[in-house]
Length: 221
Image (cartoon, rainbow, N blue to C red; front, side):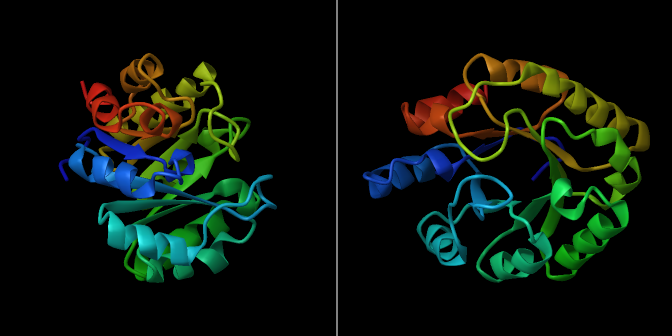
């Protein structure tokens, strides 16, 4: 994949599980190259979603790049399990490690040693600038533009300030991490995200509640 190539990562959190075969076929026929897989443990966020067996099944049914977003209390425990079951990239929340740069760096290194790409994510109230020393260790930074836990929320435009800071820092230091945004991405908000500096868009409800192929194409225009 070329550096900064725009990537759409449909989130299966919003997939219609009454029409899985049909929607996965449309996904495979679309221009999506990634699949965003939200893991929630019911503690870090007030929702419970998918385990490693589900990831392995999706990897078999839709062999795309698996972008696994851990919203769990213990990402160091879960990261190896999901890598073993098909995760290509593991993103975990800094807040789960008390925003401690040394603990975060150690987990990034562990993920890389296991053969996967590694990224961090921050909740809307978490300051991104405190992780400046870690940018060289990252393959991706995920900015949450909603409160993590549930799909279908409205886009928080003030989170684009984090995207702009990440974009400027990447350019200034000639780094290669991707800038991903998740939450409320649709036909209007995606343009704001791209202008701010995002190159990876997570889209759930907008993709799976509309024509999947056309929705993804629209986000790539």
